[in-house]
Length: 92
Picture: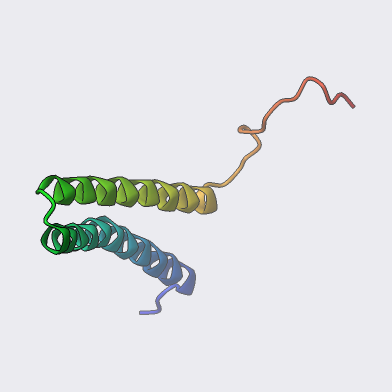
């Protein structure tokens, strides 16, 4: 059985994008939570520092996920001419 190389390349590309999304969702909140915990112990701050760090990490993760999704959709969406922007100022 012969495997289509184009199909395999697209499948591996999709798997890598999903892996990148999972990594992006997990790492920023965890790292910022650890940073917040260190700041709390080092400077004697309250637990609100950890909460703020987690929220900033989540915000960072979801904005990055949004960018990854938009780039992925832009690369994989074929333009058939229906989505062209119409400009009324540039007449031919």
